[in-house]
Amino acid sequence: MKTLHVLAMLMFAATLLAQEKSPAPSGKFSGYMFGDYYYNLKRDANLGSQSDVATPGNTAMQAFQFRRIYFTYDDDISQQFTSRFRLEADQSANTSNGKIGVFVKDAYLKWKNIFSGSDLIFGIQPPPAYEVSEAVWGHRSLEKTIMDLRGIYASRDVGVSLKGRLVPGGSVNYWIMIGKNSCNSPATTKYNRYSAHLEIEPAVKILATFYADYNDRAKRNDPFNPGSTVTNGTMTASVFVGYVDPNKLNVGIEAFSSSTSNGYIVPGARSLSSLTAMGISVFGSVNLASDLAVVGRYDYFDPNTDSNAKGNSRNYIIGGVSWKPNKNVSIIPNIQYETYETPAGGNAIDPSVTARITLYYVFL
Image (tube, rainbow, N blue to C red):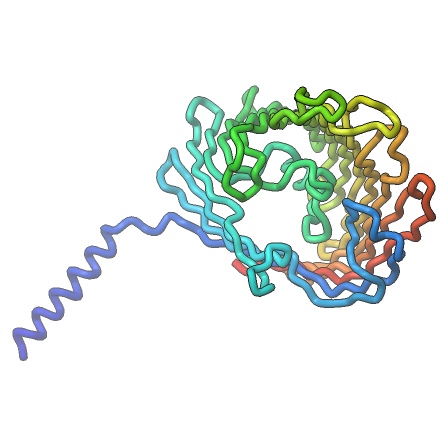
């Protein structure tokens, strides 16, 4: 028995010694959720003919919903390499039996300082399109930024990017990316989306970004010239200016234009024309106290600016009050209000109105 006791003590000591020599785990888990109780106060029956609406659903529809659940693991592989793996549960990505689905949101490797001041990123990752404007908006729990909301570019893409500083101190930054424009899905074509983003800080508390991309796509058949094909790529450009005074005030304005060559058949014409969408978003939040803020936003969006395509534009307004009973918990009563241009030759469409109580919380 004494011999067994001594052996057990030695094994215990060896285990402790091995634990002391083993490197501490370098990874970190994090997560957050947001959802609402909502009630559709008003919908117009004629809304069914409209696309790209921000406020779907029928009058008097009310429910509790989770619009996002994130679970993230970030790992410092070494001083030079880091990685992120993130899962999202999203009610819009339902399983085959109608339950809330889970999918891979992020899966990328970052090679830090591949050369001085620049990082290389490979995998499923955010595109350069609107990360800065979303950060200044600061209320993704209420709504996506306008380019994401209107489907101009999804919030994730599969590809490779290079981002970093152009001048010391980070007052001028760049970000370029080659992506498949496949969101979180496997690529199905040989065509790529090429993006470039420039961020500058012209003065303290002021940010500005300039963004452009070209989405290469297969040529389309020309319906007016049988046997002929024409280009069908899309060129997108946007500009954003924001003012950030931490814990006091956030204000931003973002505008974009996205044009698809030969994407529109003008009524009565025998030729193809460019299909151009445009939008502008103005938003801000003011802190009334350390735990209380007023939030507001106005969007204008027109999916087809051609004078022959009247009846598609809409205005979207969000207003709310954000209360933080805890630094990791926000309760945000808010109203969504969307109006619609009268379709050419059609009936006027009444505005859509939805009341919500949004809950956002960090759980890791």
